[in-house]
Amino acid sequence: MPTTVCNSVVKGAIPKLPGAGLANFFALRGRQIIEACGALWYSIPPRFLMGLPYHQPLEPTPEGIRALLRSNGAFGVRFQSQQWSGIPGGVYVYRGRDYDLKSVHIKHRPRVRKGLQTFEIRPVEEDDLLNQGLQLNRETMKRQGHYDPEFGEASHWVRFLRAMRDCPEIGAIGAFDGKRLCAFMITCREDRWLNILHQMSRQDDLKSFPNHVLTYCVTKAASEDPSLDGISYGLVPLKSIEGLHEYKLRFGYQLIPCTCVVVLRSQVDLLLNNRLVRGGVQLLRHLRPDDQRLEMVETILRGAALSSSGGLKENS
Image 1: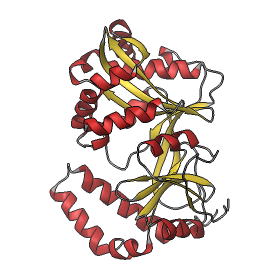
Image 2: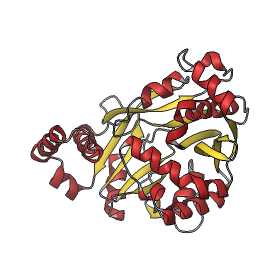
Image 3: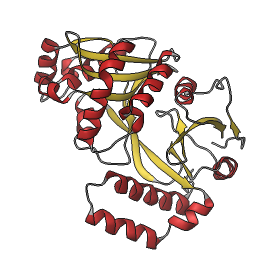
Image 4: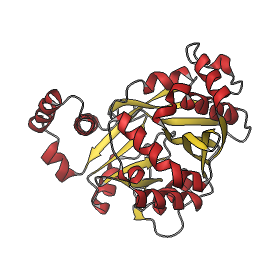
């Protein structure tokens, strides 16, 4: 539906819009927060804006998005929509109430049982994340083939934990073997939804399936909470992570289809959104198929081509 063209950099208190708690968490981590097109947006490197909340499609007007890009100097924006053209994507969601082992794929049930026998699931204290979390972050990123300084550098991780402390919506729950933290989730609880934001685990403990039991226990507890309407397990990523899609579906989550819209600022679009550049990136991807940065660039350019050529779908 049409939205008001109104862009403002948020300073101080975050406006009471959907996703305000998560926006405040990003703000405390040094991200810029912008109110525009009836929604909140946060900055992501390199100079992109992402719409909030994740589980709710946004339907800004093309005029509103152009005004947003002009006024804030961002290279581009990314958001989920049901009305725009773009890359097929979606959000992983669970909305049921009767969640138990029968809700889990038969191949995962023995892994959950082993995890239940091995680990204690409980809230994670800040000291545990400070002393052990960085190691789990680094090992997880190494397995997934990417690196984010916010989760890999000690000073950035300390700022992340301070932001958690100051945001009542943000919490952490972990799988422990005694005092040893083996896996943890960072979650955001607001607007009657539980958003699973991050999940990290220790390499040496994977054989006992701490991720499986953590996903199961968090999903089960949230499904039994009458104050929650659903659980969001994140968006379809712009880069491939082996087994992630199947993993989430096997825990009973549904992929709710949405279009992933990528709109580039006019100058950036003119420079990059053309056949020559896209062809060059495709060639580099062929030469370096495991480079996730190239994969993400290729996906962004493909999304920008689809969104700019189609804009709003004809039946919207």
